[in-house]
Length: 138
Image 1 (cartoon, one colour):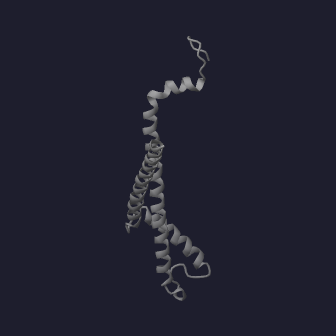
Image 2: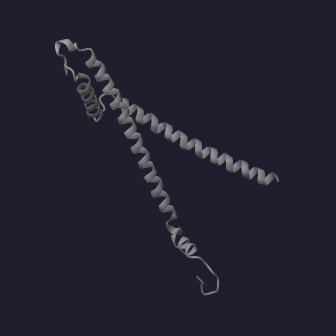
């Protein structure tokens, strides 16, 4: 495109100029979305861990029953049905976080996530500072 003065500018440059006032808003929205995605992933990981833990605990508890007396799911398919039962119950129980393991993992992962972000910011700042020092010394 040619402006009124005769300068040639691309459509991308024109769009970039029009979008500058919204850049901060976009950055804030992007950061918020990234944080929500990260929190959802942490929540899922914590819930899944507690679910697996509870399933394994239920399996071991079920194994203590005497299968010769009938027990819980006695018979030929006891391992199959018992395993499905343990898995389902573990998933169902983990929704209410009865042991608090999921909450502890969630808190720990969020702290690690915050620490990692701080370390990355510090490393980037150090890298920029080092580059600037090198430019000043030369």
